[in-house]
Length: 283
Image (cartoon, rainbow, N blue to C red; front, side):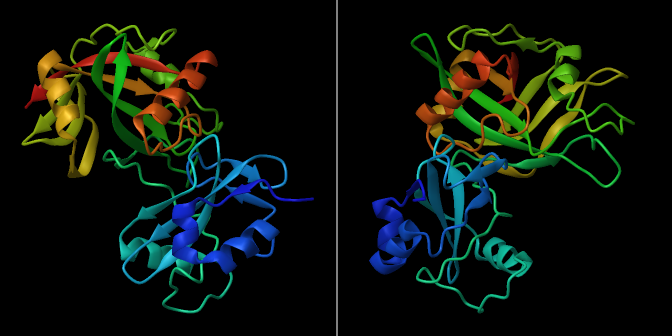
């Protein structure tokens, strides 16, 4: 059975025609994989699959993703991340891989181009921890572009002390005042006490009300994240940022804002998005 695999011209130019043809012929492509975007299983025989080539200074790693999540593309990443990924692959691979010798890397997650970051969330069971991925992008509400954050954990998020493994991420946020989204064109209401901290053109944190008064960090970047000028200007003009939240694997890391919107619209149709408008703190 032929594989439903897409190798873009960009990826082909990096890995060469021979390697691309071997992938399309099935010699180097897996039957099943973990999507490098949404982290859920995929099947190259049953669903359209994108090839995603992560490229560092000296190393290249080939991963696979659902075509509905992201298109086939080349993604520059830090060399250290690629070296760590290669070391963790169970099969022995030669050192110093280059773009002509890609390997499957299910443990790499596609970084979004609009400044994602990670922060620990409440684990659902002992030894299991979810990571909050943050993607910045402009989302149109009617004809007006709103600076937005899409928050998606890498796994189920439970209530403190929960060991059931049940995902309660959206329930927790609704308890805090976030509302289900029925239409992306509608701007959600502001959530009192919450805010987004932007300073010197970089995203620092999402703040929530503190029990003793004031604000405390709900999510904080390990390093301040650079945002685009368009995102910062939209946030400044409206003095607020729209925060969307979805369960793990619902949206994934989308490389373009139109694809981000499409993924959000699919999640909205499934009733899997909550949101709120958060006042902008800083500039």
